[in-house]
Length: 210
Image (cartoon, rainbow, N blue to C red; front, side):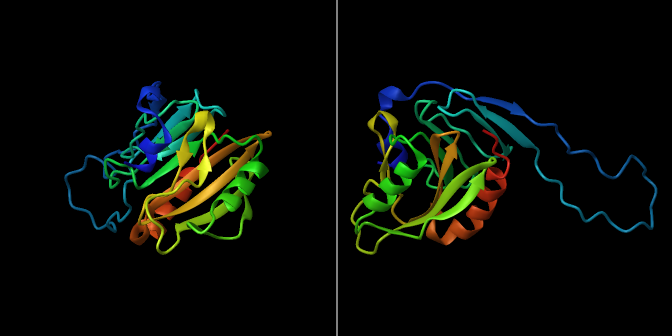
C-alpha cells in the first residue's frame, strides 16, 4: 500500500483537474535552406513545452507550470490532494510533488504537529523560513529514522487521511500560509534520486501562484 492510497479512501477518488497546454515552442530552429553554411552550429537544446495546470477545486486554488511530459493523476478528492509526477515515477508515484490540505487550522499548528508527531520514527531538519507563490512558508527536510518499521503517519490531512513518507525515500515539506489557510507541499523521491529530483521540483514550485 502506498502513502498515496493510505492517505485517501478509494471511495473518495473523485473529481478532475483542469489542464491547458502552453504554447508549443518546438520550431524548426534552422530555417528552410538546403544550402551549406559556415555559421556555427546551433547547440541550444529545445525544452519541452510546459503545461499550466489549474487546481480550481483545491481548498486553496492555485496554478503551476509543469513539464509537458509530467503527469497529473487524480488520486484523491480534489479539495484535499493534488499531485504532479515526472515520467520516471512508478505507478505508486514514489517520486512526486504533492499538494495537500492538512487537518490543523493554521500553518503554525501544522508545523507544530509535524515536529511533535515525528517521534522516533522520523528525522527532521530544523524548520526554516522561505516563501512559495509570494506567501510565507516553513521548510522541513524529512527522512525515516534507521530501524523504522513500515511507513508511519507524520501528519493528518483533512477528512482524516494521513501522510507518510515512502520507505527508502527522502522528502521536503513546505507548510505555506496562504492568507491564513495552510497548504502542505511535499517533494519526495527515493534517496538516491532525491537531490536531482528536488532541483526539478524547485523549478516547478517557482511557478506556483495561489
